[in-house]
Image (tube, rainbow, N blue to C red; front, side):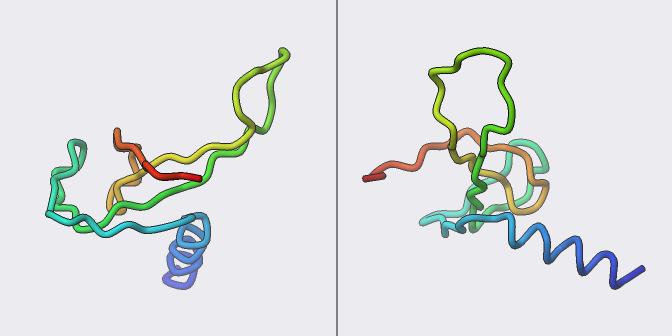
Length: 78
């Protein structure tokens, strides 16, 4: 069972696209953990039932502890 848990953690780490260190500690609004880093996960559009003008890809920022989406912005994308 411990091996299954490690495989799940490894799979989650592979799904993470990037990790950003915070200049100052913050607190997750969901799990209340003190955050020193945030993780970025890529979004891929998998299905749509209409002609969509929305982008096919995107990114969300998540809490590394509870994995919930945090409201934030990554600026400076070229």
